[in-house]
Image (tube, rainbow, N blue to C red):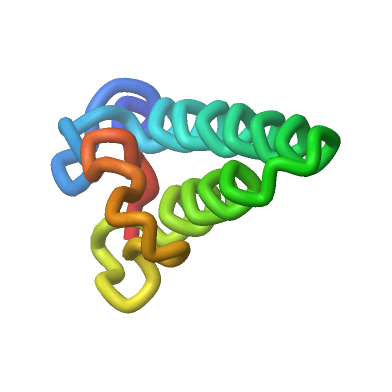
Length: 88
């Protein structure tokens, strides 16, 4: 492991981005989904609460885990693989 693997490039990460860069990007997506979930909760929007929860689970699990990365709320859509920057 070298500094360049953390900041610039790592061959096994999605799009070969640096590991720290991927972590920051994924953290931002999780924060955005958490904010959306809170707003949905405050307005009583159950559908978007479930959608945001699914997004958070899928971002944490990553597409590499087919048992955890899925359409949890069965609304026939989930986070796209392009959005998931979590590494396994």
